Amino acid sequence: MDNLARACSPLDMVNSMVRSGQYDMATARAAIDAAISLRATGGAALAPLASAFSAPREMPFIDVSSNRIVVPDREVDLLFVLKKPQVILLGNVLSDEECDAIVAHCGSRYTRSTVTAEADGASVVHEGRTSEMAFIQRGEAEVAERIDRRLAAIAHWTPECSEPFQLQKYDKTQEYKPHYDWLDPDSAGHRSHLARGGQRLATFVLYLSEVEAGGGTVFPNLGLEVFPKKGNALWFLNTDSHHQPDPQTLHGGAPVVGGTKIIANKWLRQERYG
Ligand SMILES: O=C(O)CCC(=O)C(=O)O
Ligand SMILES: [Fe+2]
Image (cartoon, rainbow, N blue to C red):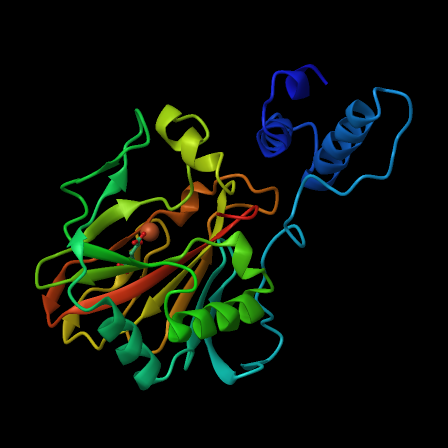
């Protein structure tokens, strides 16, 4: 109640409770919802108010019980599954035409890629990420909306709880050195990003171009390298089931040796991202 009075966000409080190791996600959410209800009624009674949290369930998930995943507008192939941390390669997620349409839509709007500065959360150029990037905002392109809905169906997670597509274009020698996609709750700079939509629970990397040589997505701690293939999508969970960062998810984009690699990132958040 004190924290609520000091206007900490409900999500911040839930994440802190879970990090303390004393509560699981569901218990922490229920406790914060109850405290909010109590506060709204002046402490008189527990009114059944709507939850402060918008996410539909605890974690996004992909159904791996069958080798084909059927979503309303496509049949997707399950190519491999790594159990822990969960890394899944999906085939036939996008058609060639869809990949080309997304790339064409972004045309020449790329700028040098940035990373989030730990000190203040600013977007800064970094020697570890030498690619160029472009964004597709929500509602901007029909093809992006369609793929957004498809990914939402595959991952059982509402598109509202995800970031807009971020494209990355790597020419020869360009790379993204190993890093984490999760936001670090102990970094002042990341906290402002966490305040908008919460943690990045899962990542989709959509491969939009064929690459002649190099450019694999590498996981140094797992001894894994996934090579880009147009229309495929790589998925991994960035956190455990309690939404806590998983250090095993260290990954990067290896230098491109021949051709141009273009990917679209889609990050699924804990809460509505807007
Ligand atoms: O280029 C890749 O394969 C991975 C890109 C990546 O990890 C990122 O943009 O966060
Ligand atoms: Fe990444």
